[in-house]
Length: 132
Image 1: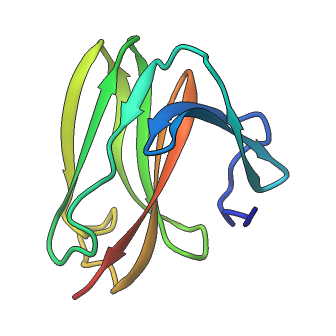
Image 2: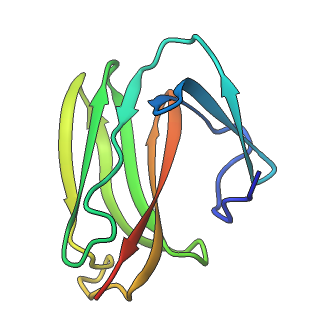
């Protein structure tokens, strides 16, 4: 498996549904290792759309258990570009968007970005392409 290149702790794990079924991801020394499982899923992160995007991209997720949620955008160097969500959230469905800007409100450069959704029960990564 390929390394994510992101500053993710070795104990981070995710459990979610995908096209291939329910599985979890263990982050071990920078490597993403899928493990198929029948464990209960506490959050679902739908693939962001559109991809690629020009101005804004949407993120949809569903929390089956309330908890602290962090949604961050990183560039290929692993540098934080923007924190989109960083707060306690109740059970329910959420929709947020990223406007393609960094923390200072400046337009981010065209390129590939990693979107990381963290919940107390796991972590879910996605790749996004910004085209200016």
